[in-house]
Image (cartoon, rainbow, N blue to C red; front, side, top):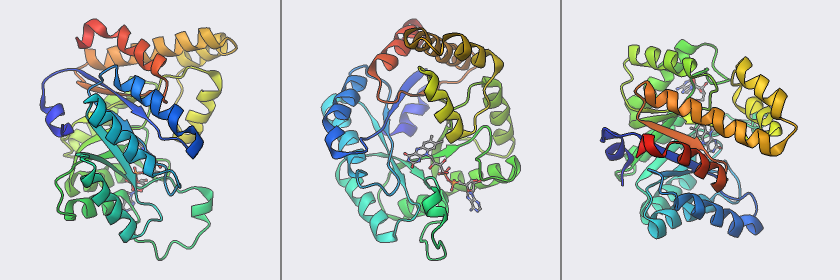
Length: 291
Ligand code: FAD
């Protein structure tokens, strides 16, 4: 199923994100975890892409398996940073041949190693370049892009960030998924600004359940997200107890999602981090809400 068709339904939906293994030996256990998540029958499952990594082929394998064997729509991520035009073209053809209908078109992070290389000859500078190439491939994919309620860390200001976001949408993004955030007001404020800038496509909030204290440091370092006092208190109080932190993290994420649905958001994406138990708990907490 194309996600633009899914988002056109006037219904509340919950979807999950999974990531492929970083090593070949971890493939089977990661595959099993993604299958358990697929059996929850979310509205779709997104599968991330390891930028430049040797295991990027697993994105396609996992997405194909979930779609074909579990009947759940999938969204395969694709990054372009430091890739050649030939590699990207090859991936697009592979996705089409695997029956993938939805691609999340991303630039990918500029790691310190990439930042240190000579970038003058790069075929891709920004995600918008990839979106153009997917459009020009001749295959009719539904394309998504990333957006940042708290500004992308490399952006000088939100006005420029939104200007470039509009370029991605104009190039062919049918929807946008947000970076994680822990305060819904940041999302509502962002939505107001992008709608004012003429961006009208569905925006899918990305919610990260923080279920252990170490995860919060990693998540914040990566995303630069603001951490509300209410969340800090929860980590201070329960961070030392894995079971308590897990329960509190799931409750916090559930609370965020209920608030989003209550305020008119129809689709919420959960960064489930390959944890079927966490995905199942959140879904269970919403069983009468999403039906
Ligand atoms: P871009 O849209 O290219 O934006 C990057 C920066 O460049 C921004 O500051 C933007 O304002 C600026 N910019 C954009 N266009 C222009 C332009 N034309 N001229 C000048 N400046 C411009 N990473 C992975 O490696 N694999 C994944 O699977 C993955 N999935 C993700 C899913 C989501 C929902 C999100 C939010 C992020 C994901 N990421 C993933 C991380 C992402 O790759 C990084 O955040 C990356 O730094 C930016 O990617 P982008 O596609 O948003 O880039």
